[in-house]
Image 1 (tube, rainbow, N blue to C red):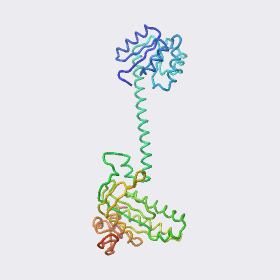
Image 2 (image 1 turned 45 degrees about the horizontal axis):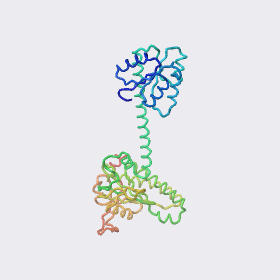
Image 3 (image 1 turned 90 degrees about the horizontal axis):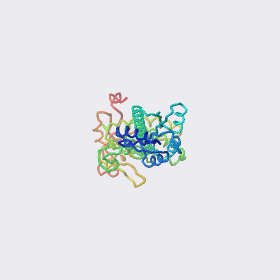
Image 4 (image 1 turned 90 degrees about the vertical axis):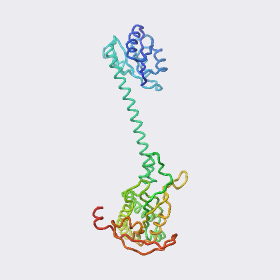
Length: 367
């Protein structure tokens, strides 16, 4: 509603127009007047008042017909109409409301009643605006939730929420950060895929991805990609987390336990599949990888290569980690050395350790 509110008074009696105009102008309103129905329609469409005081009994085009035409005009915004009538019987009042009137007053118009009606109409207009604002915000929230749901199909929940939230920092912008990287895959999957039917292969992958994916989400890891039976997960980006190395270890051990259950089921079907993991910690370059229309969120660097090579060396059931990672979690886990490994792409042998499990006190705390 504009300030001051604009009121259109419609009456075929000049004296009535004059009295109402004086009273309302004294209250600070902007006043428009019309002496008949045709003039009222023209002014209402041109000036679009915030309120119309409309006399019912007028020659040629009465107030009821004016009200009907205004309410039927979809090009006009909502304009409250108070029907002003000399008759106060229920039949006349009902006719005015049926024509589209929002309220009625009887002549002679009482100033206090007029002010009260105007206040009510003002509050109604304000409430209507609040409702429109609320509806708009609800629509925006629904759209945002829909976008978030679609993004979560391609990105980690943390990254999807950052993208939707916006802000000064672009989460997809290339940056460097220390991360803990986890690589895992299935031992024996290549041989299995060479002999199994495609439907069997896809069935195993669905079970495997669903089980591992739930654990990734539970430990707030960022899944970079699926590559058949292989997965790469990293911790501490895009959202920094406390104890990324500890989270990675707990996730890997939970995965090993869950995979043992899956392997037992698969063996009953004749599938010999097991599980191996490699974990490393270090700095990586992270950001959007791909092209317009198809983006992934990935990490590249020595740390990712090292985790992948350790995964490749892991025997069934092993979770291999570097000395650096072991130092970050040695109070948490029991580990055994597996010796120095000659890894492709690394000039020097890399000392590696197999995680046997959590220390007894830590395992109890984690339950």
